Length: 310
Image (tube, rainbow, N blue to C red):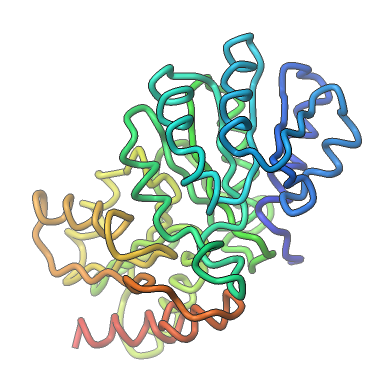
């Protein structure tokens, strides 16, 4: 199956919906190219707003349009959208419960070589801490399409973080299990539970295959809905395992690992290991180079799981 960047699928899904829904409006902060939204701007110029490099204005304008009945999708690099416009996300979108979808593109370490200024390793913690703000991190373009279709049906604010590059799909065309705000069990096992989000889901799935060859049975959970967190899925996965591993493209504090640890600790105590980026400026390089360096790949996840089980 061909690889498609999640950001491109967001544009394609919105363009398809915009054929009949003229209330859909896309906004960019000089990011239509990097966000793959040039086709939308060219096809629906009257439903597109370019704010320039002004993320705070981007979010506030999106909120204003939403209050006028528009369905606003604000597209900007995650590293800036989750920091420069944090107050606007909190007040104009979440506090006002406004129908704005904040699309954080090139999330995590997608901008690898540009360094910490362009990395977004804190956005899960920051956005999830805001009341009324939902946080979604889809694993591939197929799941991204289903997520956008679902988001078009509601009027609540949300933050959606996607990577920059095309990634190998986790699912198959025509076979994408998806339920809004419910995690997906990619596979189920009895020895270790691996709970991942975003681009870490495919390596987790591949790690399960490596573990199977070692006689270790692994559950893999795609927690694309980081907030609201699917606590029932976490409990189910943990109860059927000896240990739990979380995998995320994020700092070690306040992200998926912290959230899962809270649930497991209070509901079904197990040992929980969080695999994440370190609490330091990460090395520069491509996403793959960064992931390989820190063991955030199939081999690294499988190694950690085997150590836990054995």
